[in-house]
Image (cartoon, rainbow, N blue to C red; front, side):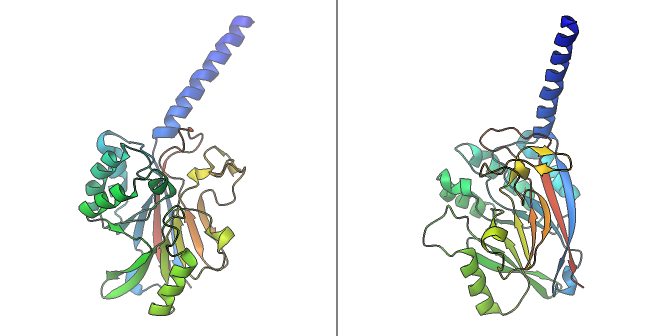
Length: 275
């Protein structure tokens, strides 16, 4: 009897170890169709790949596995929503990754909390500039397609400089200049519905949640990055009163806490015009 129990415990330990290993390495792709009001006709079906929270993780040599899966999605645009350079050493893999992504589609970046807390933001900015990747540091650009335009905006993470624009101020400034236009906002944290539910934006792409770190079937994430249990905005699409928010589960781990039942994720968003 004791031998059977010992064998069962050993088998469970092996299964857990295999599961933990797979949860860190198997990349999955989740695709969403999101309706945007007044979307220009030429942007119907526009495909955006979102990558977030790499945290130094690697998927094959020089992230070849990640690059291959991104290319398979045939994106029109790639957005990077922060936490790619989180500690010394991450800048090397990030610098190797960016040119590979840029060969697939134009890339746009917003800062995460860890680029700032690690004091690596200056180095990150240098890498972005050298690799022709647009850093949306509290500013906006217009994407162009067949003579039509769509506004893409990026708000800095709260860990940035104290005197920088806050998301609400940035949106107010944008609409004062450009009028009532549809806007896609890149922002690292998944906290805007709690803090700014009436933000004047149409679609928010964010990360930070790591999918709740540990996920359970039919329940979802059980631990927020703020250490609070059962985060509401853990992953996926949230149709809120004023805007739609897409939350990426991200690619890497947080503070070396392993992902459990929570595969690293590539998000694909396809745009359509709201009815």
